[in-house]
Image 1 (tube, helix red, strand yellow):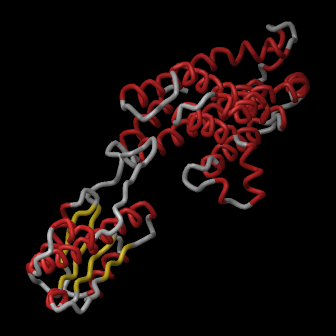
Image 2 (tube, rainbow, N blue to C red; image 1 turned 90 degrees about the vertical axis):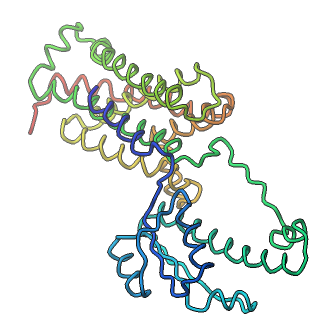
Length: 362
């Protein structure tokens, strides 16, 4: 309950500490070998995300290394590129990148496309200056439309800011679900269920609150420690108030505990309830909508996404903390978390009956 959640927090936030992957290995096939082509290679190597680690005499050798995952991409500059540029014959350079790893492929494609554009622009700029054009005329010709880019809320395009805020809470919810089902299942496993109820005068509600209140305090301490660490130590972007973060952490813990208790009440078996909790928690990492938007999923999956506590937690976080909108804008997701908190009431009598009559089967 303490060690593994702390390890998860440190692991994910430190793994993506740079925000974006940097110095990813790139190869070059430069058959032109002129000052212009070497300048392109130097500019590519200067990019933050690309690092030229190898030069190849042929495309086949570069292709072999990209298939063996030694490099993620390579730039191919054919012989006569500079000569054709100077003669205005539109030479063709190529870049190849692997989409086996989606993030590296997309980021390196951006770098390679940029360097290709810069190369043609540099030659065009030198040619137009030789013809007497002013810098303003050259700029208007090379870039007729200037892009004014605004990346809202996460201008650094930091993977840490948007992945850790989903993965770490998701894994914590996984731990809460498992521990909630486990703590009830062990009463049956070790034959202490009747003694547990006797200490609460056979009142299952009192017994359940007494069992899970210490759990709740421990989970809240961990969740609030995580929020302080990422938002005030690592300075993850957030517009919401501290009170909204406190409410979000409380809803996260109580909703996860509610679902864990409900899962055990639905199937009063240590093995089956923990299996359901682990399956539901792992599926929620895909259904949350951070990597692939829910609106792009099949209609049945969109409906299914409402049954995962992590989905509502993430939407509540995005709306009220990340973007700073009032809670009223996320009332439906808040109501869904309240419903997860109240789910144990549907099975509370079944849990009491299981504690009194069920025999543990390994």
